[in-house]
Length: 220
Ligand SMILES: [Mg+2]
Image 1: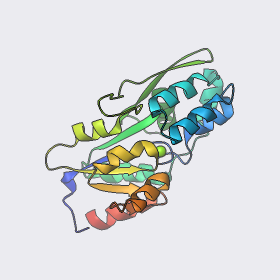
Image 2: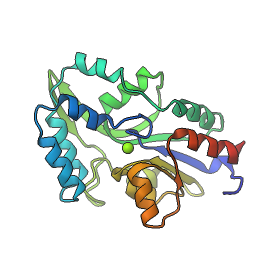
Image 3: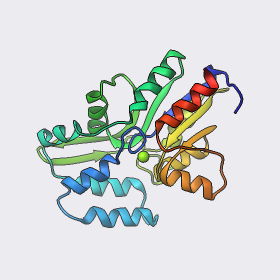
């Protein structure tokens, strides 16, 4: 890519396994789910028999943990150290940065806050926690598009104004639709394999350092 005009970019980050070093929901299900039903839902979702909304609803409803234990768990979740560096880099160049995630507000915001990150524009699912009971809701699902919990593509198309270049950074199945309409994709994991298999343009990454190095090179 040639040296680019920095003001053109708008950057979308996935959260789990992109900003965080693990998939937080999967890890929470392993730790806190009352039974193994979440594994069947995961399988059905992988086989595309159900959408991520139905999958996540059932899975999150199976979690049984109170706030105190949840909060101390959230304190242990690590984020990629280059995420903050990228926020500084993009911030100093007035490049807008958003998070689009299939995680839930309480966990996502809790992890960001514990890492000293506040005030970001975040689009994710919601959860009410009463005692040990989790009640998920999905304000950003889009039945016109598909069965995703949070329609990341809708956010991308709405936020990318004329002349902007959408940058997407992600790893998973829920990132596919949004990535396919983005202008520049940084991919790892499942997303990387899929883009490679389908011959779609992308920058393969192992972590956010690769994204940082890329932008430093083109915008320095
Ligand atoms: Mg992810």
